Length: 236
Image 1 (cartoon, rainbow, N blue to C red):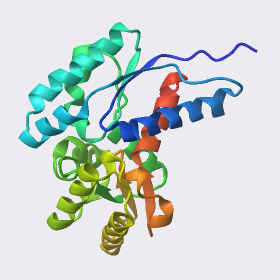
Image 2 (image 1 turned 90 degrees about the horizontal axis):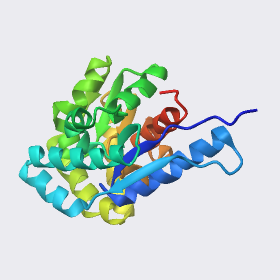
Image 3 (image 1 turned 135 degrees about the vertical axis):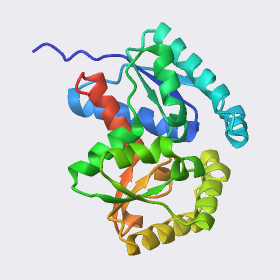
Image 4 (image 1 turned 180 degrees about the vertical axis):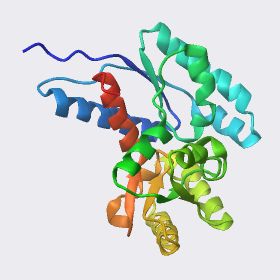
């Protein structure tokens, strides 16, 4: 039997590297599960320096960040990438700029997540992530367009969830107190009618899993990685 041929996927990572390593592991595990033996994923990874990007996020300098990630995508295309994945939720705010610059297919994390939620028959979903992801339309609107109802935490909880992501999770700090805080917020959203919760930051899955939640958990890192495996095998 002829071995299944893979496409080459370019990953724009490093935002943060803590979650990019999860992508690398999950995608390779997925390819091995599909192809077996010694198979691993055909990947190109450009891991950017997150510190200046974090500063630009705080300044709202999205045009400059769009140029930076577009340049990253163009470098991956020049190296042979046939499609792209941005290994972060928040930076999908400038996903269109990356796709336009490279003219490559881009696996959008919100679309992949919405597909999985729809397959489970849920419509009312909670969304956790950075302030940008929880409050701005670039992410929420794609979920709404897919027919989902989206709940986000109240303002004080959004601020604390955002702080935990940048000051702890992106720096490899996994604190029980923060896990308890996330679990409390999820419980409150469940009490308000959410049937599931999107871990809409690729680092949250390092802290929270299904055992921590009273409702269905949708880990965007795992979902995005599974979509990447489908792309590699020409099924996305």
